[in-house]
Length: 388
Image 1 (cartoon, rainbow, N blue to C red):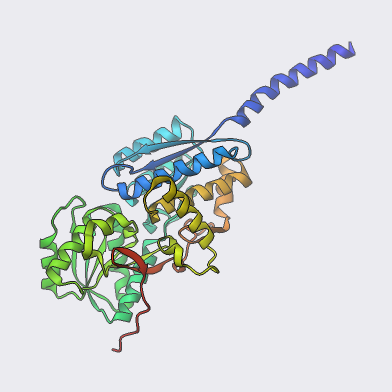
Image 2 (cartoon, rainbow, N blue to C red):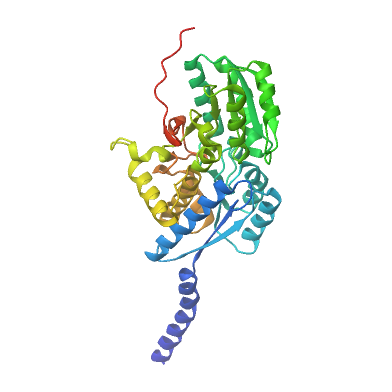
């Protein structure tokens, strides 16, 4: 009788144990909504490449805590409508534990409420500060805030003695958010906006816009866009305003393809960016350098193209998620809490220090000012402050 009770207990334990073991061995589903094609392809394609590379690498090593990753990438083509549909699909049907992306600010703004309501962690790869301000419980982002980019640009303008500027922005979520930041912050730096033009993201000729800049008497242009049209602004401006006219770009310029599209006209363009684009020449004491070089070399060896800041944003999102899962597992509430309190994670955009009040985790020091010289990104030489 005693033996029968033991056998019954053993069988019951076995029946209970089987599904638990199976569940623990199931892959961890991570969703991604990226503009792999369309006007934001210079962002979305390197982001998708990066996630596929990192997923393959971690699965080759056995996964996270013994569980492999199932990466589900949806190509939104930068369409907010598609992003909304994909977000619902990933949350309700695929049951992902987190979504990386979208690539653009407009898409991120459209789906952040959906992700938050669905208690699904969203790690946006877009820059608009409005994505994480005000803070929503499940919403995070990895690129530096557009407010910091505007401040870095205006600080540089102060050093150069520039006071009258033209603001050009594309008619997208990123363009609109940047325009608002520039308008708000300019007075704090004594900058006057004398021309303020919004252009179509699919524009192929912006000569008329540049004519308005010239007529207004602007001393410099700030161009805020992530679409190919931003390179057309540069070419048209050089033709009308000369090779030495100061042109500032946003941090949405951090892909060498934009430089190639603008050609020689890109030389002299100034913009804020993370340190990935100059990783090779950073001092060995820089804490980010090992991470930047490892990512850059792995990406460029696999895809035969230069790494960009945008692929870096996906790298950071993936690294944050993996670090969180290692420590907290896949319970969405525990994982969210782990990310919200994560400190000192070294990424490509900077060193992340999240908190309940800050779901970006980066400060202004994560930016450096770069310029384009002979078709390459290089650090902007220190500018002597111009006497008033």
